Length: 356
Ligand code: PEP
Ligand code: MN
Image 1 (tube, helix red, strand yellow):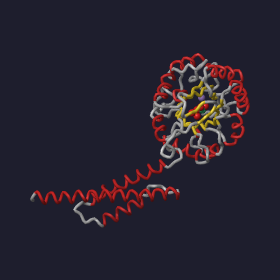
Image 2 (image 1 turned 180 degrees about the horizontal axis):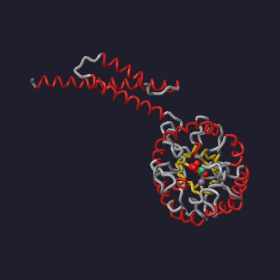
Image 3 (image 1 turned 60 degrees about the horizontal axis):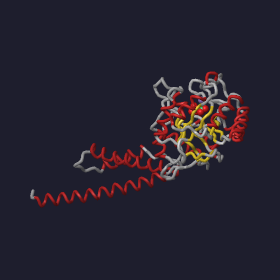
Image 4 (image 1 turned 90 degrees about the vertical axis):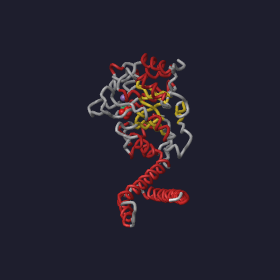
């Protein structure tokens, strides 16, 4: 074969490559259109029946020299790439997606801006146990420049026989004490039937880890205009967390704060495993502010300071910390709550001494 004819064949291959490239991209465009239509109709992107029908038709028409097996694996790659593209495009079209909204969502509450300010702190007891306890913690937090107090009134306890929270009574205490100290309240709503009373007290409605998959509750709080702190379930993927946030946003409430609070793994030395990679991934995929609850992740107080530093270093907008005036007698989560001097030491280790 002369060099000239070799060059000619090579030129033909080059032009076929470009033709294939063009055809593949044209096919991808069509797949995206199909994906969009399917999403509008509520259908799944992947349709195995359609895929095997297409493969069958392709193989029936295969005249070689590629054997059927080679053609099959080539086309399967094309199908997979198209499906990946459809799923990616669908993810990017969600309200929670960074591609849908480039700028950070900023949730302004209690004089702080989550998503804009650095190292916002949400601190307070696991459960509201009484006015004295709350007053002591609130006064201390206010002195340290904290603006958001947390405290459970309705507690999601694993055992129905454990302390369930003081309910309405706790909400009244929270409102009064927080007002006295100029703090905003973050408290959990467990049940849509309590929403009205919780709304009277809460500046931020917390959806607990156990309720991340409770779609009717998510949609109910989505119809309010109160900021939502949405905690990741200990068994949820990040995609599932974002889809839960989408449930809230789809009802018109775009004031959603995502909260990583540890996931369940085989590790037993911590209560949960803090998934630190969740922080940069959520910031990358979504415009919503991200807070890390180190207390529930660790389940112990001795490693909270390094976890808090890690969370902030990874890009978290804020931290949630459980702080109690006397953790030894706490009615819930005593092992992980910081006492007041412990809280001060943690602040110092973060380089956030506050104005106190
Ligand atoms: C809480 O923050 O009070 C709580 C119960 O945490 P989680 O829902 O993350 O377990
Ligand atoms: Mn707790």
